[in-house]
Length: 235
Ligand SMILES: NC(=O)C1=CN([C@@H]2O[C@H](COP(=O)(O)OP(=O)(O)OC[C@H]3O[C@@H](n4cnc5c(N)ncnc54)[C@H](OP(=O)(O)O)[C@@H]3O)[C@@H](O)[C@H]2O)[C@H](O)CC1
Ligand SMILES: [K+]
Picture (cartoon, rainbow, N blue to C red):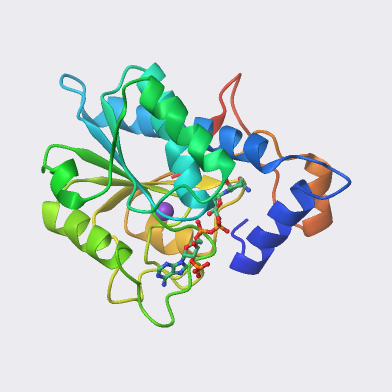
């Protein structure tokens, strides 16, 4: 059920290989849509009367891309959303995702000061996913970003892996997201999700697009989803 960082990368490579032929754009859209639905589900359960502003903190890789997509879907689901994106777009895909967000008048900010994170906000953590390497610490500006999220004491919903956590061993690094309340695992939970569950966090899985034959080939469980939902809550 819980997979290593290596297996997560293998799943991605197979999905985008000749046999399944998904594009990165497709996978990111499906991932971001799942994240938005899981975040909306969690927020609606926790804040019944005054939905908070959702600050989507995006890192430099595809985890950040999932965040850019999720911000747009959260906007369509009725949430007040803004994007915190310190890096520049690294490809035409990211430029397009930023353009789509701006066209919806979603604010795109570069610095902590511009975002002005408040205790009553919810942070969607899309800083690092399964390719994070914490051996030499977290490089700037992401170190500062994680520290200011921790300082704000805002509750955090994490995309795929809580940022700064070791993908397999969990919360073992000095600089890491501390106030993680919910986790949205994409495709299949990574090993660190076990530690997350042990702390009592809400755990969702999104990935209702993974061909069962791929689960069989790489020996991981097919996730069961109810009715037409794109996510399922497993803890
Ligand atoms: N299968 C799916 O459902 C899909 C999941 N997706 C999401 O993609 C991420 C994995 O994306 P990837 O681009 O491989 O990597 P990350 O976003 O996790 O991070 C890579 C970037 O982070 C930088 N990095 C790594 N370590 C550090 C560090 N210690 N300090 C600072 N920066 C760091 C790294 O920089 P390099 O210079 O080292 O290259 C990268 O820029 C997965 O988790 C899902 O969320 C996809 O959307 C596809 C579908
Ligand atoms: K993350």
